[in-house]
Image (cartoon, rainbow, N blue to C red; front, side, top):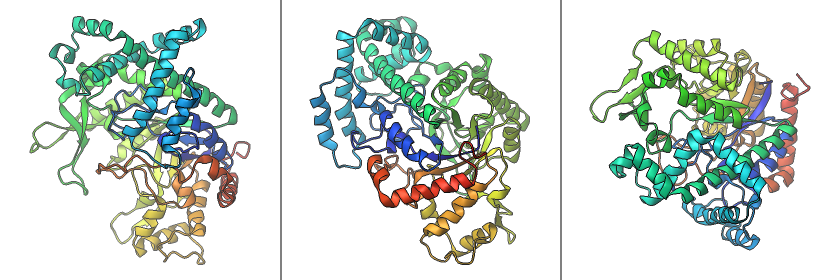
Length: 517
C-alpha cells in the first residue's frame, strides 16, 4: 500500500436518493467520486456477509464467504418491471433508515423476480457466466445455498435443532436434500452471482479512478452458519470464544462464537482459512484482520457459567508459533503489505513485535497511544512518533466518535493531548465542543504522521457525533448508522464542499495523494 488517506464507512451506511433504505453496491460509485474530492484514495468497509433476518451486526455471518443479497443494487436487476422497483422506492422515500425486516420484505421479492426472469429467459452467455461462477465457488457456495434453503424449510431454526441426520451432515440425507431443494439452491446461488458480479464491476470502476477498497476479515462466523454446520469437525462446539477478564469485565466476555479446533485446522494446512483469505484478496485491495491476538491465543469458555475460561495454546512459545504460521499464510494468500491487524485491547507486547516482523500494519488510535499509563508521567504519544508500518486512526466502528470523545473527556485529558500535540494557545481546549479549528489540528497531525495510512470514520472528518456501534448493547440503533443526507445532496452542499476542499488540501500537504509522494 502506498502512503494514503482512507475513510471508514460501512456499506450499509451509504445513502443515495434511489436506494431502498440501506446502502448497496451501486452506491459505491457516487461515494467514491465524492471522497476523491477529499484526497482520500481508500475506503474501508465492514464485513459484507449475509446475516440472519433479525441480525444487524455484520460480525455474525450466515456465511463468511457470502455477500448479503440486500446489498444488490436494484437499478442493475434485469427482468424486474420498473414499476415494481418504483413501488418499493415509494415506501421508503424520504426515510433515512428502515428496519432490516422491512427492507427484506421490499427487496427479496425483487430478487426473486430477477431470478425468475433469468431462469426463464437468460441467454447462453449469461447462463455460462453463472455456471462458471458456481464452479469457481463450489467449495463454499454449494453448502451455503443448501443451508439457506434448509433455513427456509425449518422456519429459520438453528441447525442444531434440525433433524439429526441433516444436523449431523450425513452424506445420504444431505444428497437427498440437495436434490429436493435444487430450485431454491439455484436461486440463492444466483443471488450470490448477482452480488459478486455487481461488486466486480463496481470495484473495477473504482480502481480505474484510483480508489482502493479495504475489507474486513471477521474473526469467526456465527455458530448458526453454513460454515460451522458444514465444517463441524473444524470447531469445538461445546466451547465459545470470548475475552479474558479485564478492567471492564471481571469475569471476561462471552461472544457466543464457536471455538476453532486449531489442531484440526492446521492439520490440513489451514485450508478453510486459506479459502477465506483468497476470497478476501479477490474482493479487496487490502484486508483488516479482526481480533489478531485471537489467532495467536484464543480465549474460550465451557458451557459452565462458573468455570473460568482458558487460552489455547497455553504456552507463549506455542502461541507465537501458531500466530506466525497463520499470518505467514495470510501473506501468501493476500500479499505482504496488504494486511492491517486489529491489535487493540489487551495484546501482549510480543504479539505486536511479531506482527511488525511479518509486515502487518498495526492500528494507532491516537487517543489510546500513551506512555506511562496511570502514572504521574502519563502522556500521549505524538503522531509524529508513530511507526511507518501502522495505520493512524481517529476512531473505530466500536468507539465513540472523535467529537463525542472530546465532549466527554476530562479537562486534564484535553490538556494532556494539547501538550503532546503542541497545540497553539489560540485553540479552545476548555470547550466540550470540538470546534473545527481544533478538529483540524488533530487531523493535521495524524495525516502528517509517518503512518502508511491515516484512517478516519466519515463522522470524524466532519465533526459528526452519531456512532456505528456500542459494544455490549443490543438494540435497534446499533449497526444502523447512515449518512445524514444522500451522497448526491452532500456533494452539492456548499458548506460540505468547502470542507471537502479543506480535507483535500490536508491530504495533499501530508503527501497522501498519488504524485505527491
